[in-house]
Image 1 (cartoon, helix red, strand yellow):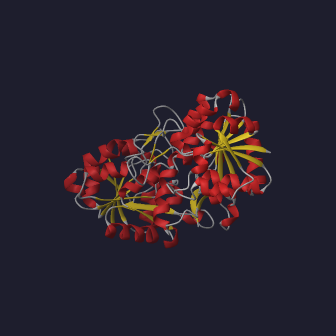
Image 2 (tube, helix red, strand yellow):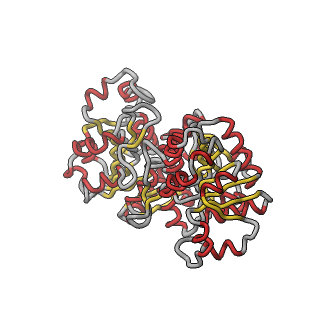
Image 3 (cartoon, chains in turn cyan, orange):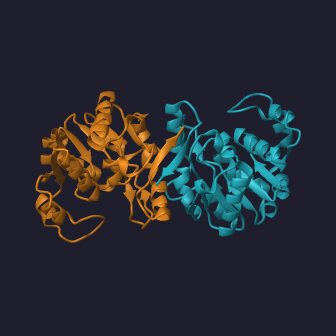
Length: 227
Length: 227
């Protein structure tokens, strides 16, 4: 499948690599492809994109618009604060009525760590995106765990869960099959919360997630809803 | 132990009954004890307090101030929106430097269900209480599950967790032992998140909790941090 991944950070890298390994054709979208390819200095988590890109010859890089036009589905792996800007650069024409897996979180590090949220309570990033692009089929998912677990839930033993929120039932059904086929999520561990407003629930897990990260000193954990 | 339980709703009822069964002396605090005892009509979850009270002769009812003065520890099981008002009626003199287990959530049902939060993101009810009563040793805990599970985690099979947030280490140590002795929480399932600001993390789980309640059609579930 042709897949667009928005974002050159560690989440985008891990998602793109995982999909390329499964022989999907991946184009990573970024604001300035030339600048991203030249970026060789570390400024966050993971590998500088320019270094990472050199060892991933099967993955292409383009503008957000080029990536969106290429992808049958689009995965939003940008920083949450930059997501609407990235989508705006992609443009409504290229995004069309595609499925967008929104895996971003609207974290605000401007006041230091642990971060707060840029939007919460009576709204969410998932809803903001859906409102801005009504034709897009936004499905919020995977945003409650670190990226290594997103693409390989088997790294953690036993039962743990991934949530799905979205307005379009057919799109959610496809996303659930993507989660299973691409990354190995078992259907019993995929919890459909309902429409896109339920993204408020999963985005607001991040304040707990970041504190657990501080206490456990690792991001290698996930939530399980025990029933 | 002498224990004050603030709140006559289902959470206060279940907590008070569980403690009384373990032979603790419990006084339930309420705004107007006479009115609470006469309340025989249903206006929320659980049993009308006046009906419940008649079958729980071992549990006394008093004003918030009387209950606080009586308790060696105080458990805040009021509606989150009414917690600061209840504490204000109890008064600083009666509250003193006691341990307050804050198990309330600042849910706002004024715009219908599912509720939003009255405070979140860069503040929490736990912090509001701690700021208002600096001598009180506020420990946020048990607020991420329904009350039947609070007092009997064994209702759910397997591993699932309870969180603890508070500024006073000695108070948290005592609360952890209360959780074990009163209700049977295993120490490996008690996760200390840090100071009272970490209550932002657990209070903001409620938006997910209420949606899971909608999907699962039961409150008989809890979260497990799988590592």
